[in-house]
Image (cartoon, rainbow, N blue to C red; front, side):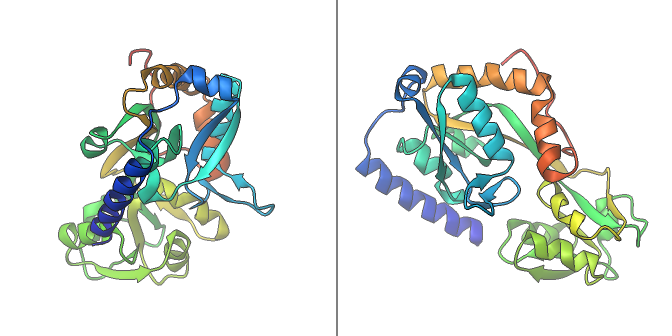
Length: 269
């Protein structure tokens, strides 16, 4: 239901901004001439991006955004862009590029273009040494309680795939990890990369991530459709950032652990 509401909200916002701003995307040359690149980031998605103690943006996306701006030779202007606003803001030229864990999909590709992957997000299992499960399907038993967030799409996924497991619903990512640490739940089955950073708050818990990955999504940088000059530049830059291990090192800096499935750089794109 939440995904449907977000889709409706996105469609409404998209229609509004397209009517109000019938303009073309800024080219790479225009960005250079302007001296700034407008980068959409999620303001409430730590440690991907959020407001820090000094009320300035910080996180993985911020480091990457500043690296992109430096490579172009301009200043990064970070634009708060909630999840449902990422595609509409690109279409309406409110931002030049979108970060914020933007997963490639066929539906989005009708509206925007994508670079090669920046990072991945893998649906897998985060649990502790209190159980000896080896596969995610082992949790399909009523002795296990899976922790998830209210309104999250994966709640229905788990009910369908693991109908015998109990489910505890909480409010946010940090609460899910807290519930497992406190023993109120046995595991989290989600895009685990975004949850691992919270495990450092419970150093006495022996955390385990199962190698049995359910699936992996590829998250790219979004650009306005047809803005090939900018997209091609970013593809070349991303190859360099992956090859030099900058992306993986920056991910580990903010998440405390490497991606479950790192991006393998390819010179062909």
